[in-house]
Amino acid sequence: MIGIIVATHSRLAHELLQTAEMIIGPFALVEPVSIDREVSVDTAKQQLQQSFDRVSEDGDGVIILTDIFGGTPTNISAEFLAVKQVEILTGVNLPMLLKCISARRGMQVDELTGMLKDYARNAVMRPSELLG
Image 1 (cartoon, rainbow, N blue to C red):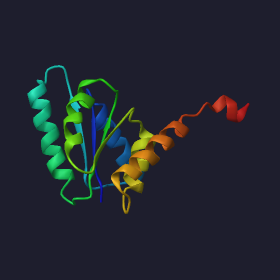
Image 2: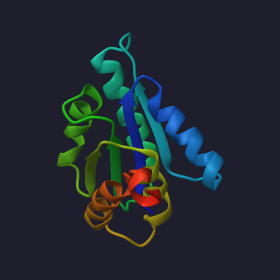
Image 3: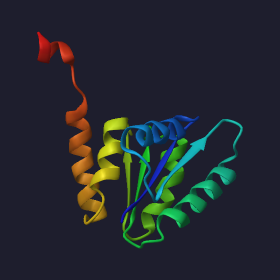
Image 4: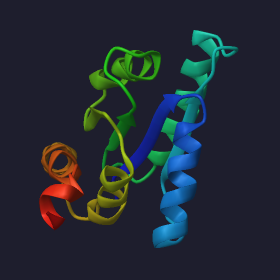
């Protein structure tokens, strides 16, 4: 099973995972990494490495979902791109996370990442267009 890391500024990663668990119940091989202003880059790298080691134990690869392209969580995560079967997807949101958790069995990392990118784009809705 593909491991998942949600790496964000502040506590967004923790809150997204807490909300996802409330909706779909417990899940395995998913970890939050929250990077605060008070955390040094070296400490953040260590936290990410520790999470990576835990979620990659199945050997099926890892997807790192980050909040914003160019931000510290994404920049630190980019160092893992050299590892086989690792992808980063920026712009994490709750629909993307829920789909990632539920669709990751039996898929390759690159296949899942491509599907998630399209899914997240289509998950942004404007209710007035649907109801009006």
